[in-house]
Amino acid sequence: MDKIFLTIDGHRVEAEKGQSVMQAALAAGIYIPHLCAHDDLVPAGSCRLCVVEIEGLPAPVTSCSTTAEDGMAVTTVTSRLKQMRRLAAELLLAPHPSECTSCPKYLKCELQSLIQYLEVTDQRIRKRPNMISADLDNPLIIHDMYRCITCGRCVRACNELRGIGAINYKEIDGRVRIAPVNGNLADSGCKFCGACIEVCPTGSIIDQIGVIKPELKKAD
Ligand code: FES
Image (cartoon, rainbow, N blue to C red; front, top):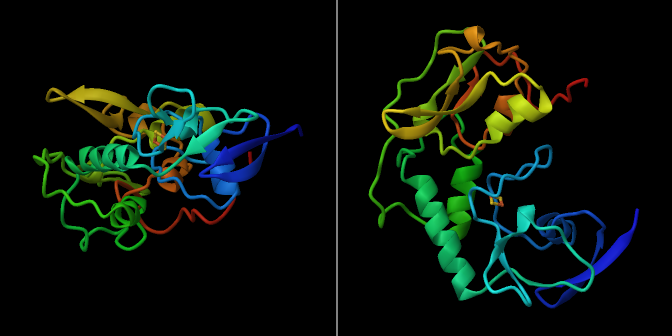
């Protein structure tokens, strides 16, 4: 594997050619906040929490979707980046319920951890709750899209990893949401493989009865 060298926050970092700036930073122990990115998925660059500044570029870029290059000089913490991340996090929180303790992912939720790390609250924003009742109809997966932040990880997992496409973005009541393509999971071709459960960062898609164990690696 070809090696390249870049500078991140003044540290000389070795990376593999083809890695994203975010992958290079994380591998070097430099944390860049992120949410829509996932190791197994092609980056979507949609949450914009992972913005960084790169010397020579006029505006910040998303580090998950920017390929690291030899000689690059990257800065991950500036007041402009903090403001951008704060705004991005607030936008994620707008449709999300403020109350966390009743969520099955409480204390295991990536969004909750991130919000605490960024010290962001939903006090400044106008809440736009997802008024969708949970789909409890099938015996394996609960879709509680009331908690969905539309990061799209589940859509990419279902399409890219499993090649199924049972869920996708849909416009419902004038807002873009994520939903089964044909009303419910079974009619949409869902194989109940659990890939969407594994990647969901909130408590929106969860295992109904503990059948699917995210810690178990699935065969290809
Ligand atoms: Fe990079 Fe979401 S993690 S844009």
